[in-house]
Image 1 (tube, rainbow, N blue to C red):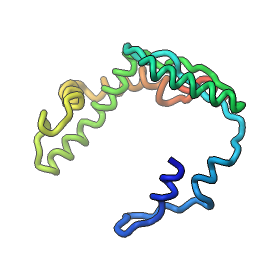
Image 2 (image 1 turned 90 degrees about the vertical axis):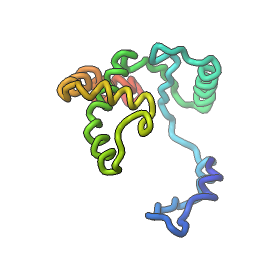
Image 3 (image 1 turned 135 degrees about the horizontal axis):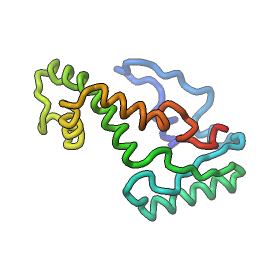
Length: 159
């Protein structure tokens, strides 16, 4: 990836803005040592769906590699329940509903199965008759732990 960044970075005709280039090639960064890091690794499922065994093996192997490099590895627990996650996501969808309606109107389109993916359409429809105060309450109660404070989400990583 670092080599690809070196090849594709830089400015090209038609770019709307310029990103400042690093002082040295990205590939050289791979050779530099890092400070000791504390890395949080999630090995338990965060929802009702099981983690695929190959994903779990890859995460575990990555943790072993980082540990062999001298980094501290901490297993982190899910920051919220699956039900809380659904409430957070739905709350965000409900809050973004007016913007979605404005965008559709500006484009001269109707919101429906031809203009929104199935999941987004269902969230939009569920939120049409739900008061904004309900969405705010769900974000405030469910989301406060996971979204406004890094401690529950990241555990001891930043302690």
